[in-house]
Length: 172
Image 1 (spheres, rainbow, N blue to C red):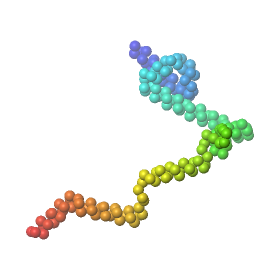
Image 2: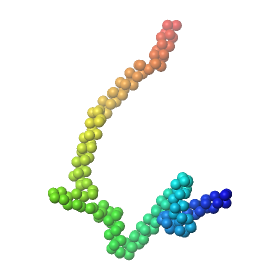
Image 3: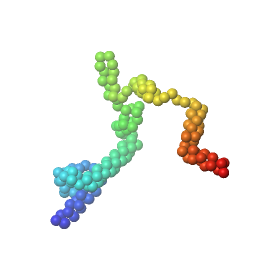
Image 4: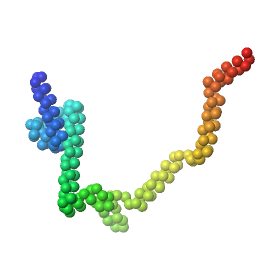
Protein backbone atom coordinates (compact mmCIF):
# COMPACT_ATOMS: atom_id res chain seq x y z
CA UNK A 1 0.00 0.00 0.00
CA UNK A 2 2.88 2.35 0.82
CA UNK A 3 4.55 1.74 -2.54
CA UNK A 4 1.26 2.61 -4.27
CA UNK A 5 1.07 5.88 -2.30
CA UNK A 6 4.69 6.69 -3.19
CA UNK A 7 4.06 5.94 -6.87
CA UNK A 8 0.89 8.07 -6.85
CA UNK A 9 2.78 10.97 -5.29
CA UNK A 10 5.51 10.64 -7.94
CA UNK A 11 2.86 10.66 -10.69
CA UNK A 12 1.29 13.77 -9.20
CA UNK A 13 4.65 15.55 -9.13
CA UNK A 14 5.40 14.49 -12.71
CA UNK A 15 1.98 15.72 -13.84
CA UNK A 16 2.43 19.10 -12.13
CA UNK A 17 5.86 19.43 -13.73
CA UNK A 18 4.37 18.61 -17.14
CA UNK A 19 1.57 21.15 -16.65
CA UNK A 20 4.23 23.84 -16.13
CA UNK A 21 5.72 23.00 -19.53
CA UNK A 22 2.46 22.22 -21.36
CA UNK A 23 -0.56 23.92 -19.79
CA UNK A 24 -3.04 21.60 -21.50
CA UNK A 25 -4.49 18.96 -19.17
CA UNK A 26 -5.07 16.35 -21.90
CA UNK A 27 -1.48 16.55 -23.20
CA UNK A 28 0.04 16.57 -19.73
CA UNK A 29 -2.00 13.50 -18.76
CA UNK A 30 -0.98 11.64 -21.92
CA UNK A 31 2.71 12.45 -21.41
CA UNK A 32 2.65 11.22 -17.80
CA UNK A 33 0.38 8.21 -18.45
CA UNK A 34 -2.31 9.48 -16.09
CA UNK A 35 -5.95 9.41 -17.09
CA UNK A 36 -7.88 12.68 -17.21
CA UNK A 37 -10.50 11.28 -14.86
CA UNK A 38 -7.73 10.36 -12.40
CA UNK A 39 -6.35 13.89 -12.67
CA UNK A 40 -9.75 15.40 -11.84
CA UNK A 41 -10.29 12.92 -8.96
CA UNK A 42 -6.92 13.92 -7.52
CA UNK A 43 -7.89 17.59 -7.84
CA UNK A 44 -11.20 16.98 -6.05
CA UNK A 45 -9.75 14.95 -3.17
CA UNK A 46 -6.27 16.43 -2.70
CA UNK A 47 -6.37 20.19 -2.10
CA UNK A 48 -2.58 20.49 -2.07
CA UNK A 49 -2.37 18.80 -5.47
CA UNK A 50 -5.22 20.98 -6.78
CA UNK A 51 -3.39 24.14 -5.68
CA UNK A 52 -0.10 22.93 -7.17
CA UNK A 53 -1.80 21.96 -10.44
CA UNK A 54 -3.52 25.34 -10.69
CA UNK A 55 -0.26 27.20 -10.08
CA UNK A 56 1.50 24.99 -12.65
CA UNK A 57 -1.22 25.68 -15.24
CA UNK A 58 -0.90 29.41 -14.59
CA UNK A 59 2.89 29.26 -14.92
CA UNK A 60 2.53 27.23 -18.11
CA UNK A 61 0.12 29.79 -19.57
CA UNK A 62 2.57 32.60 -18.79
CA UNK A 63 5.33 30.62 -20.48
CA UNK A 64 3.25 29.99 -23.62
CA UNK A 65 2.06 33.61 -23.68
CA UNK A 66 5.65 34.84 -23.52
CA UNK A 67 6.60 32.43 -26.28
CA UNK A 68 3.68 33.57 -28.46
CA UNK A 69 4.45 37.23 -27.89
CA UNK A 70 8.08 36.74 -28.82
CA UNK A 71 7.00 35.00 -32.05
CA UNK A 72 4.58 37.83 -32.87
CA UNK A 73 7.28 40.42 -32.23
CA UNK A 74 9.67 38.49 -34.45
CA UNK A 75 6.99 38.41 -37.19
CA UNK A 76 6.42 42.17 -36.76
CA UNK A 77 10.15 42.74 -37.18
CA UNK A 78 9.93 40.71 -40.40
CA UNK A 79 7.20 43.12 -41.65
CA UNK A 80 4.39 40.55 -41.40
CA UNK A 81 1.29 42.73 -41.88
CA UNK A 82 -1.07 40.21 -40.21
CA UNK A 83 1.08 40.18 -37.06
CA UNK A 84 1.23 43.98 -37.05
CA UNK A 85 -2.57 44.24 -37.34
CA UNK A 86 -3.09 41.60 -34.65
CA UNK A 87 -0.74 43.35 -32.25
CA UNK A 88 -2.33 46.76 -32.77
CA UNK A 89 -5.88 45.42 -32.41
CA UNK A 90 -5.06 43.83 -29.07
CA UNK A 91 -2.56 46.31 -27.62
CA UNK A 92 -3.50 49.77 -28.84
CA UNK A 93 -6.85 51.37 -27.92
CA UNK A 94 -6.99 53.37 -31.14
CA UNK A 95 -7.09 50.15 -33.19
CA UNK A 96 -9.17 48.02 -30.81
CA UNK A 97 -12.18 46.29 -32.31
CA UNK A 98 -15.52 47.63 -31.17
CA UNK A 99 -18.72 45.88 -32.09
CA UNK A 100 -21.37 48.28 -33.29
CA UNK A 101 -25.03 47.35 -33.49
CA UNK A 102 -27.21 49.82 -35.31
CA UNK A 103 -30.90 49.89 -34.42
CA UNK A 104 -33.68 52.17 -35.61
CA UNK A 105 -32.45 55.43 -34.15
CA UNK A 106 -29.39 54.64 -32.10
CA UNK A 107 -25.94 53.18 -32.47
CA UNK A 108 -24.82 50.94 -29.60
CA UNK A 109 -21.23 49.94 -28.96
CA UNK A 110 -19.73 47.62 -26.40
CA UNK A 111 -17.82 50.52 -24.89
CA UNK A 112 -19.64 53.62 -23.61
CA UNK A 113 -18.95 56.85 -25.46
CA UNK A 114 -16.98 59.69 -23.91
CA UNK A 115 -20.21 61.65 -23.45
CA UNK A 116 -21.85 58.72 -21.64
CA UNK A 117 -18.82 58.34 -19.37
CA UNK A 118 -18.94 62.08 -18.56
CA UNK A 119 -22.66 61.91 -17.73
CA UNK A 120 -22.09 58.87 -15.52
CA UNK A 121 -19.12 60.50 -13.80
CA UNK A 122 -21.07 63.69 -13.06
CA UNK A 123 -24.07 61.72 -11.80
CA UNK A 124 -21.82 59.56 -9.61
CA UNK A 125 -20.08 62.67 -8.22
CA UNK A 126 -23.47 64.31 -7.51
CA UNK A 127 -24.71 61.24 -5.62
CA UNK A 128 -21.45 60.91 -3.68
CA UNK A 129 -21.42 64.63 -2.81
CA UNK A 130 -24.76 64.24 -1.03
CA UNK A 131 -23.20 61.67 1.27
CA UNK A 132 -20.52 64.04 2.57
CA UNK A 133 -21.06 67.15 4.68
CA UNK A 134 -19.95 70.56 3.44
CA UNK A 135 -16.17 70.70 3.36
CA UNK A 136 -14.49 72.99 5.85
CA UNK A 137 -11.70 75.31 4.93
CA UNK A 138 -8.27 74.50 6.34
CA UNK A 139 -8.56 77.34 8.89
CA UNK A 140 -12.03 76.22 10.00
CA UNK A 141 -10.83 72.65 10.40
CA UNK A 142 -7.74 73.72 12.39
CA UNK A 143 -9.86 75.91 14.72
CA UNK A 144 -12.40 73.11 15.25
CA UNK A 145 -9.67 70.56 16.03
CA UNK A 146 -7.96 72.93 18.48
CA UNK A 147 -11.26 73.57 20.26
CA UNK A 148 -11.98 69.85 20.48
CA UNK A 149 -8.50 69.17 21.88
CA UNK A 150 -8.82 71.90 24.50
CA UNK A 151 -12.23 70.60 25.55
CA UNK A 152 -10.92 67.03 25.70
CA UNK A 153 -8.02 68.17 27.88
CA UNK A 154 -10.42 70.01 30.24
CA UNK A 155 -12.71 66.96 30.47
CA UNK A 156 -9.96 64.33 30.76
CA UNK A 157 -10.01 62.43 34.08
CA UNK A 158 -6.22 62.74 34.34
CA UNK A 159 -6.53 66.52 34.14
CA UNK A 160 -8.96 66.54 37.07
CA UNK A 161 -6.62 64.34 39.10
CA UNK A 162 -3.70 66.65 38.34
CA UNK A 163 -5.77 69.67 39.37
CA UNK A 164 -6.75 67.86 42.58
CA UNK A 165 -3.08 67.18 43.37
CA UNK A 166 -2.22 70.81 42.63
CA UNK A 167 -4.96 72.00 45.00
CA UNK A 168 -3.63 69.69 47.76
CA UNK A 169 -0.08 71.03 47.35
CA UNK A 170 -1.27 74.64 47.52
CA UNK A 171 -3.14 74.00 50.76
CA UNK A 172 -0.04 72.62 52.48
